[in-house]
Image (cartoon, rainbow, N blue to C red):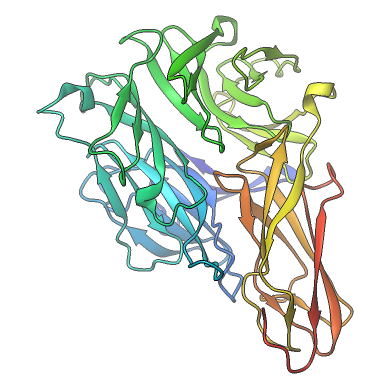
Length: 434
């Protein structure tokens, strides 16, 4: 996790008091951490990506080796640049009949007012940029970009085909900005980002944004007044849910139950994702509790949250009710059906986590190899953790085939909450992986 004072912190999930600050090569402060989604590397290296808020660091996005505690790639945007928020998406960049999956890390940059991307296998340190128009020419773009979400059609090949949904805020002080708005931008089709005014008027301040992976709805947490706002992308209309009793909305996410989870200044709240935005029951936080960041636990029993006031990490139980039934993992494609002994395969396949018909981002999936001949992942392990992308998808890691002919089974699922899904592939002498 990232913190403002200690930068990067490693936390033992079985003992929350066991926390180790990591400062080697890490800017202070930093924000917006995600696990490295790239599973194509044969070395199985464990890494994270995080965004920097330091005024003196020209590397606002860093890919970091958490085992050896060193920077792997620094992505530079310019002096005093920063990234407030990052997410990631998986796309098929191959040709018809020959899929080739690639991951992209997506970010919003407020100093220069742009959205952009980094390829996870790119070591050049040069991110792609989609700048907003000059705010001096049009004040609607005089905004402090805060959060970004991404959607994409099935045939999207490159970041220009993605649709970026970014929230921009009024700000005062050293970097004053004048406009509150949601922005929609598809660079391949749009000449410039489209501002979408908030339903609470120009004084309403947007915070976090979450996009339906299907692209039909966008949710924005907003202040002044405190609301959860749902934007219907086809009707181009808003619906609102006032949450004054919950305090200020902060980070939001789609949960494994298919509902919208919101970290608020005095509780964690859940809502249906449809036009009703109906509030769902939940447990109260401990005395003095508040929530800022949210993430799904790998076992599927609770949600982790951060409490900035108490400088602590907590576990919030997923309520036991019909609205909290978790989803399931399914294979989107199997890319490898056989290989030769002791050979590396390509990416074996792609899976997706779905709940209530909605793909869910950010779900940790446990992937296991079952083999009698010693087939493992490329780093020698037989179990690894994957996280779903903005469309609820994850690519499976490269395999190293065992010593002899075998039928290998790959099992993927979300912790203890579901039986998971499985496919098999054959190891046989003389085979070419396919």
